[in-house]
Image (cartoon, rainbow, N blue to C red; front, side, top):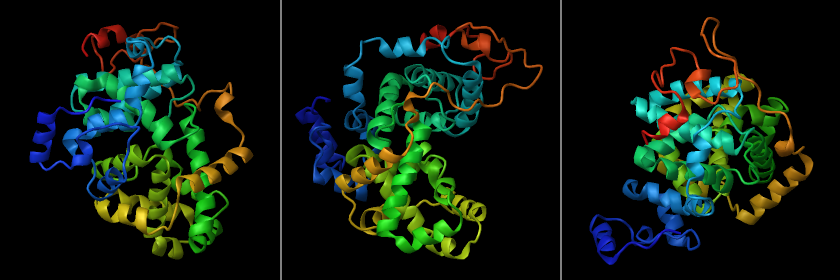
Length: 359
């Protein structure tokens, strides 16, 4: 829990038009007014970082760990497989185009990602840099550690419950839960999707959950969705998924191939900037959807789906570096020692310990 704003700060916030409900944050006291404000207007940009940190449970998570827990998690790659290290390098290079323009920003992003993977040894997934990168733009480099704990809390508490650090597996759980909810709430659309193949829904929207919508919607719309997620919890992502499907009803009716439908929806929502319309459909256009109803559906799925959270196998190995890259295959914990010699991210740094000195 974060301390309440001082009276003078509250007066300043009020003078700047900030709704009273955001002037004192406590994740144990989320009110209906906060929910309504998040849905209609979003969390004010000036307070978004603090609100995410507190309301997601990130603050409580950090408080429950030793003071230098993040530094320890971010300081070594010795226990991370070479394939994951190479994947992180490639994915950060892609993500930084959208979320950071500086080398130091990329370094902060890398520390967050390696800390996440060290905390969840089988937990790396390709969309992690996208999610962490967007969070880092909200928090700024000066609040890197808070961004990390918020990332963990957002994924494991507010977005993918029962995740256990296995985001890809948890995303499939959410897709199967969505399938049940669609059959109950939008049976006609569920039937049309079923005709496109037994795995049509998973192919269509698994990435919505595994990437927290960062690869589906523009960043500003994603943040509006996240605003609601940190306030209301995991049911929001399912509501938004149902809204995206409902908004695509005409395409679903006309397409006879799931690959074509996926491309049509991807192209449409990549430039969909009306967060208000999307959230209006999500909260008013898909019918009643209580947290208890969603959790009951999710528990039915969990009872039937094999639990990979205890699996000894790691994530699928991404492609390694191109030949001639000069990467070491040794077990050194140095980041640069395990990247290509001409790594674009850290040309002169020897370890994550050196990177931490820049924070």
